[in-house]
Image (cartoon, rainbow, N blue to C red; front, side):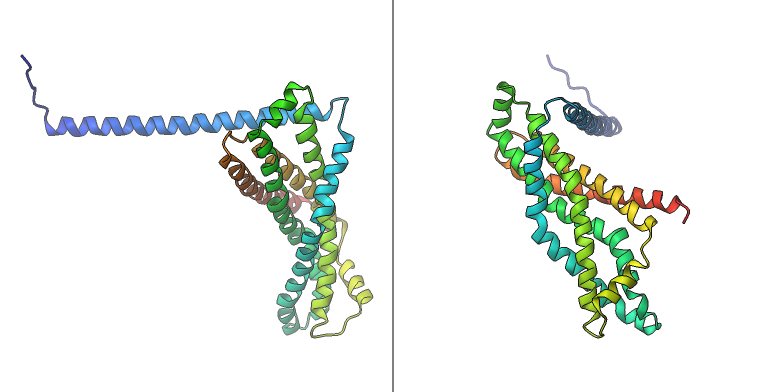
Length: 280
């Protein structure tokens, strides 16, 4: 004989609240476990990267091929970006400087702005959209088609051949692309200054570089190397650890761009704080 014991409404509410709390605790625990797992995977990936970097059989030919793919093939996009940066910054800044009679400070202001902040950050973000997404998609497609597993079976060392070469190529090429974009930005600034004025190129460059010091150039170059490391590591990590389905290739490329862009801004924020502590 089944006996139904009545449960009060207060007990029902308490039981329901307890179930909700337990579900919330499980969800938070799952999020924490996923975060720790991803963090451990990143550390393990970086450990393997460092280990393969100092191996005896370094893939020099593949490194130069990746330098060509990352550096030379990015020149058209970086050229347009650098020129437009200087051109637009000059046109936007010139009226305010003319209003205060400081139009002669325009070349120096543009040069310092480009070299210290705008050039490195904007160029790195453009490279993150092009290079990191390309690495994520390329390695992701190799992961989906099991080419990476085939390389492991044939003892080709895919980490050394695919990841190390791409990361170091990005580390060396992106600072060069940033310096190239800075130079074209100053040329674009000269074009912008001559829309409503008449300044010779030699005079404009002399005024621009007279305001640039060692403290302006060194931090920008140093953080450019970190931008390259971030772009290379994020793009390779997302592609190397892509899922099995075809949709994972697009997800790897998209997440590589988003994460690389976010980390570039974080690295820039840290670099600005460190530079601000250096006495001028």
